[in-house]
Image: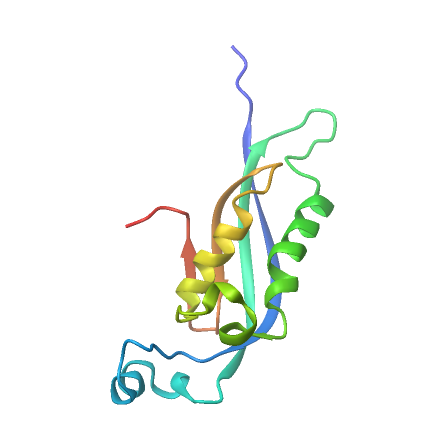
Length: 141
């Protein structure tokens, strides 16, 4: 009985972006109370760290579950080019009408990467600051 060995690969990426936490569904006072200084009308920026985990079976010919160049190119096209040095509110269509909290950023990155054809996306973790990190594994509540 021969079962394929499942291995998980973790990979880290970085991008810098700005955002403003503001909901049109809330009054100015409620936005200030809920989001505090993150509701600054001019926005603010972060140096985000994105960690992804993918899994797959070990290819006996290469000894890898996925070629890192393929994975890096996919993440570059789907996430880094779209988010790096951008205003998430203004430059990323997915956040028009949606508050670009890091929770929502994490979910959006997951949606963009789940179609990687050469391995299974297990989870996405986004670190916003040294104190705040969010992880999403695709399940809906």
